[in-house]
Amino acid sequence: MSELPKPIEERIQHFLPRNLLHDLRTPLGHILGYSELLIEQMQESGHEEFIPHLEKIRKAGRELVVMMSENFKSK
Image (cartoon, rainbow, N blue to C red; front, side, top):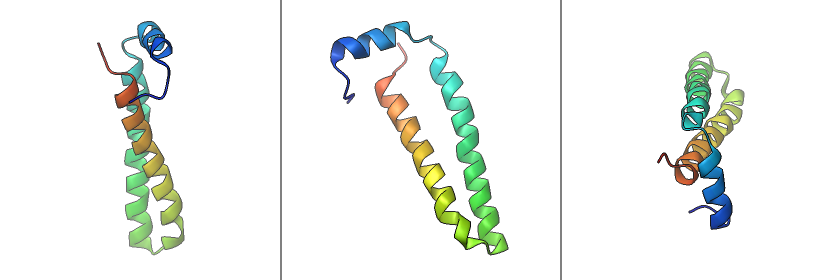
């Protein structure tokens, strides 16, 4: 559920371009994929010290995807 008051949420959804979610998800998907790739590379190369930072990036990206899906559903 959104934490925004219903009138504000409805107004935001009304004025958002239909393709905005796609436009936001595409680069976010790239960030998630790249962070996963880097995590694998750091594990293979023994640079474990970078993994917690990369996992924070991946976690934040996943949270944004969920937030966008919950709050800005396509009509």
